[in-house]
Length: 295
Image 1: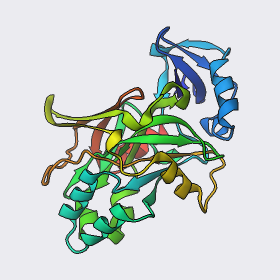
Image 2: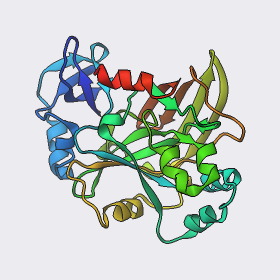
Image 3: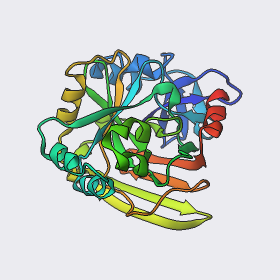
């Protein structure tokens, strides 16, 4: 089962449903938004999804949208894998030691990534900044957390990053991470009750350029230094999320310098038992802005 947000054939209003890959169908849920689902306790959300009896659509006839809406926010954790720690130190020009410190510190690095309305979805675009020389995708497992701080599901996140901007100064992190086209989430939400061991999931990244594979890598969530519970506890320690949140857990797949994304690249991120998120790379915000306006 995959909880999805979608447009039906000929429809102009986003719907929420559950996709059954066995039957190739999507069954509507009686809620207007994913954010409303994430306001429910886990037990109530599970009962609603497993007992879905709404209108049924052929999965191939619907257009998937990012599985976030309303006041749901996307947050991210940094320096949670050894490889990420090494990459941050390598790219940093003046403050490499801060990444060493945060990797071992009791408090994790957490940062705001995107409001729901800025997020792009499976088969859509991500952007690289025109004022950045080196940009990379960051393939990550996203924890889907309800208003009560329960992990209710998992999704795939592409935490696109400007390595050249952040490398100049860690204080430039918001500009390197938070911009239009810098965050993709999808294709949907795999319920937590269908993933018995999210702490041991394979993650794969492929980057294709003009039809040729130019970079690939694989890792596992088993290499994550911090527990999911620890990350969620810190996120909710001094904040509230009435429509839930997606907490991206960090990356262990970072291409060596000077590799950079280019306009036209196709990025595919697969997280075992969760799904595959694909994106086409564009340069600048204009094409992403047009995409969001067309929904």
